[in-house]
Image 1 (cartoon, rainbow, N blue to C red):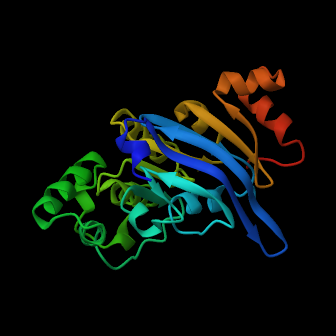
Image 2 (cartoon, helix red, strand yellow):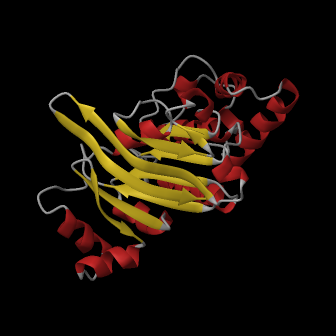
Image 3 (cartoon, helix red, strand yellow):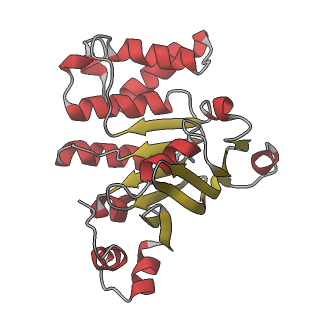
Length: 253
């Protein structure tokens, strides 16, 4: 499975007919797409569409019922544990431990991913500076505001310098300034060559950030393309109108 990346392909994340069956139905149905280096792809859909399950399958946390994910040349079926070292995964609902400090959590994450000790301190300082964590890096996480915790969450995801970044609702519950900081940080990761896959219910976030979008409903991808392409597919004048035409009985709120 290493060949697709080492052979020069720019595809970093690939879903190959991924499906996940759950009790009483199907959560994800035959999903196919790719994400390349230096690209942000957004999955947009209502609550319960299957977005989080899809991301967890690609990050190696959930085993698919059928199909396969490939991340940085590794199969989610054959190498689910190695894939975790090639993915930076973060959810908007952080659920971070509250007693340790950000520095302690970053050190634990680096050790988990096998970052050499001589490199770890330098990497910690780099992400602390990049995410403006300096003032509270040695305070208990419980004292951090929600936007500060999400910055820490992203810093942990990027600490081991993975080629793929998978984010589930990264601006969830953040205010305007907190959301803007997170979105600009994701842009910076893309500009540094990361392949970024994110799930969101925020259409404004998608328009601001995404190179391409996948519209997901009831476990399936119902449309995909650039913002302008998705609008053209439905004859809509705005992205919001295009999304509402694909999800006529649901909202993205």
